[in-house]
Length: 290
Length: 222
Ligand code: SF4
Image (cartoon, rainbow over all chains, first blue to last red; front, top):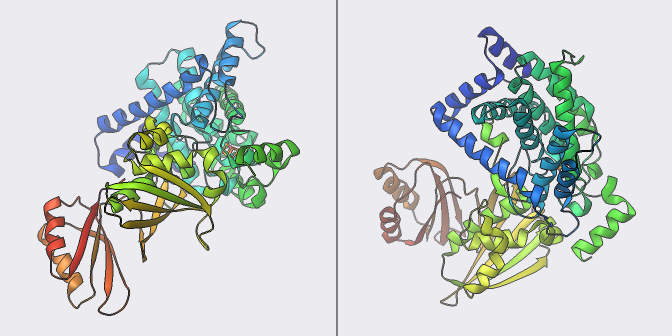
């Protein structure tokens, strides 16, 4: 097992393999299962992700609380008009991330990736990148293993929970996972993948977790949409040869320390940040019937 | 440092919106139902802490009901569980309450059975969909529902525990953890055994027929 990004990199480079190859090998050992079983299980995960990512593009969703929903469809319709600032791929990724969040808030089926709140980033980025790069299902599954490998290291050395580390730990980790995955899917080196992951976390270092009424809805959905752009731009930077000045393991460590330094009011308690604004408080009273 | 499987990172597959308030709640309901048995006519959920505050927005109510109906945390019917319960003529009640010094996501579930008896199960959703059952009726317990679990109610007499464990050993069932909770010497005791293997109904039957054993119940991992 690899305990750090550096170890993962060494294992991959020694044998001229990709990060996903090392992750798959390790999973086989850990679970005592053959490769096909593990790949098939990941395909099931991909199926659920794809359904969640596409569901909201054509359907108006409504969350249980009633405060969010329908935005994925709006973005998709806007994209189809063909005149956007960010371009087609980015808009598609944003819409898919929103869709996953909306499906989650409407009590639909999702994959925690790494958490339910941040579940939209990995599917949106990987599925959209696969469309752009014309990558088949096996290639996407490889990408999901790359993403998991990055997530394993973050979970091991820091945290992926908003209650512990703020939103940087949830949406930041998800963006790092997605960024590394699409770098490998695009043919980038393991080194580039780690640079992309580092850049993605650095971009939102310190992001707080302040969900309105304590519900995984707002601002979560929009942070999934911006998280997927973060992942895509970080991946493009790395693929262009841009390096993170701070190495991945140190970035993860910094993220953990920043998370610990966040006051409790900004770690999922809904006592600070947006949750504590007049509108946030009004919505809480309305939803929870206080 | 824990070793995470890739499916801990990309997973679980679940019905949203919250792993602790929805997925965990469904698991709590399902484990509680396996303890109480299926023959109940009404169920009251006493919600504590964050469960009490946010259960509507998180769908904790629907998840709990889905659980007692035997649905899994990734079953899309979870959303409609309350209607399902009323179709089956099961009365459902939610009570916001303060259970004292408990984990913020705690629920006490009271089943009213067909024969008029009641079964009470208390448990907490401790994050990431993981749960812990802390009380069955008056007995304090501690198990997670992820392993095959055996619950034996018996009289606290010498050699009782070894009788149970030797019966398990005879059937090649390996014990992972075991906890005995007794009300006092010679009084009633509750032994909870988490095992590595699933226990057949014949073995459970044999255990329940052991002298001084009052009841034995097996819970499949949820
Ligand atoms: S704001 Fe909090 S609950 Fe929402 S996605 Fe970020 S970490 Fe999760």
